Length: 312
Image (cartoon, rainbow, N blue to C red; front, side, top):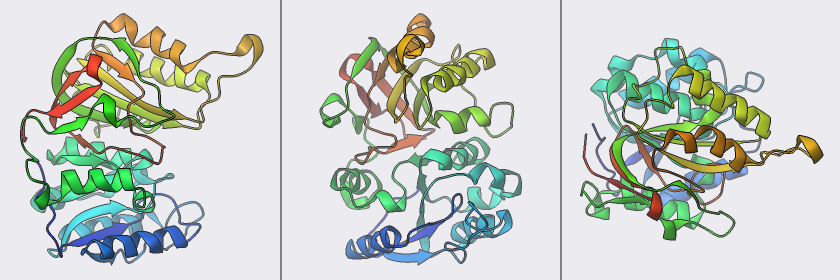
């Protein structure tokens, strides 16, 4: 199920379910930006807490998550940042509370653990998109307003475009790995975080899914290892299509030990024979599209196109 859209004057809750905040200016600017768009902002009780690299204890972080879902005034919840720590919350989350109070929940990177777990345990569609500190980018903010705000218009239409080739910004390079079309549930997020959940009950069913992936700061041999894990777990053999976003700062090695990210894609994805393209506009980059985790989408790899085809 899709959560209700935002209206002017609605309250957006901001929480820190993962990493600790090290600098305050970008987060204060995020609050001011949302207020300038005529939204009310409510920060979690422990959003500035610190427990080493974590934003407070597991109990503090999960209590902020629960409080935001339980608060009838809050219509959307956005994570301040990623980092690490979201998966630590999963055993403590009251998924019945979330299911009873469906609302927009958005983030990316480490927040992938929450996006996938909430969808798999409740059926609520979550949003892979900017964290609060990334909202200052005009491209990203435009996509948030287009997809999450009531005034956007045909949000639930069958031609609502989530991604297409003309959205790709300078610096990205589209790579069509296999042309073709497919329709399925859009599932994925950060590759490292997703793989860390394999074997747990918090991942959804992959049969016929459109898988989307991105990552940051992982050498290509580690990316190779992670795709190998996806293959050995059976996930790659179940999906109907794949979309790859930015793999940012992923060094390829030097000399005879060098191996490109494209070579990894060719090893694991091309043999699947399913529609696939790389270079999509999401991941650890300033300009990000929003992707609804769990929504049914249609993929046209040749056009780098994703669009909604169902509302639940």
